[in-house]
Image 1 (cartoon, rainbow, N blue to C red):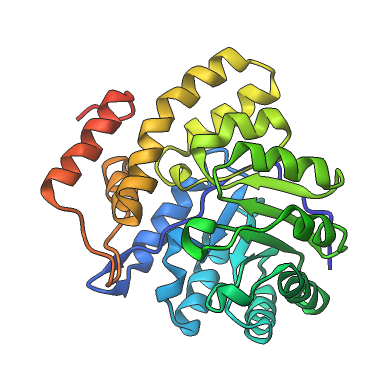
Image 2 (cartoon, one colour):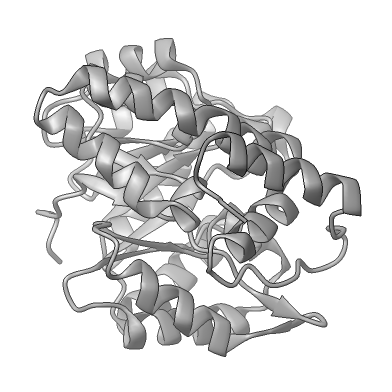
Length: 299
């Protein structure tokens, strides 16, 4: 088990393209081939944007196999293998590790949310980290789970040798700064929303897992590189351009909006799975206009 994984850079949490409820593997393969040439560090598979909560175990395994087979060999493959129980999470994480995944992204268990206090979460993640064959990252996404990992939880868990980082999708720059104050240098904090990318990188986050990197990966990578080169004025200009696009494709219209924007930008978003609904005509027009106004889309 190698814990010396460099998580610096940009990771798209890839979508699962569907056609009439069935996974369109040809679309998935084309997306991965194109993303592999965009300067990204790796791919996050089976995350929120991959509609992982709608997938069977068999589908999850087939998707990970396809991604590992298709992605460029230097790509880091992080798999979203969090289930509601520690037992299922360990089982799935190790199954995907055997396929060649490099790290596992474990979402906070939330179904029994009122019982998910600090003690429960520390115990849950420590148990998983003790029994997985690959390093794990915590996944903090309060907008979906209703649970926000506390400073105390992060402080304790960041000491575990097999817990190497966190993806924080709270969008809260203040919290990211508090997290950074509490962890050692070897623990990687990745921001989970492109709207907070520049602020997070300037504070010291290692990189980002960004839905927006599914449609404009080069722009997300460019912000990362500009910060590395200390060209903050240029980074700021680009950050301000991507904020409305990110807001439209994640906050307002969600995964349906993200997938439609991907279609416009030359990727294959495909359809969503029920209960998610397709976009209405006027919603599509608003996304098109938002991309045009940011000068990412010319048609």
